Length: 290
Image (cartoon, rainbow, N blue to C red; front, side, top):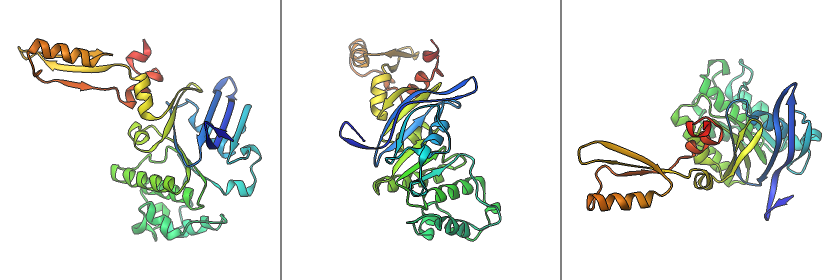
């Protein structure tokens, strides 16, 4: 399948899922290109994890059409499943095995696995390769979960909040791994609560709220489309700080320059961030609430 000239790794149309009286997904449409890093952002309960579970074939849908790597996940064969890697939020390997034993064991499940030692190095666990899993910290266990997600050389990698529990250094090392996998042609679907992470990694993203996609596009395009106002701040001659939200910051700055006769004390112009846009579209900011 293609969309606007791109071959799609994931093609979803009219996806619905209910749990009793709760509507988890209410008509999701997604087209994720091969080789793309695509982000799913949204508050808890928005439907992100349910979407990932359906894409992986681990959850039945109520309605809609889903194609992942050319197949319906609900009828995915063993060969198809070997092409899809996944890292869940709460996954953990057997506690008594060592890191090396675990990665080598999981590598046997796949027809074309990566080298286990290489993968251990990619996730930064070389120094813990012979440690038992029960001796690892929470962040180190998450790194192992990522290792098990990529050991099969997947064509599609589904990452559900993968860096939860990572410190700042480990998170950036993980970003390097994701960029390397994307450069190799792996399609990556990432759910995350870290807006900085999404902005650093994804080519495009969808913001999900109450089971619906409320915005989709590249991070910069979303900031441009929905972050309509900038904040112009300056200092008055008597030392009083002032700030004004405006859709025409250049006009405001020009007016200030005329009033001050040149340089404007303490002048700053702050553009909306992806976080500002996210909070607004999910109704978590004062502006969104209004």
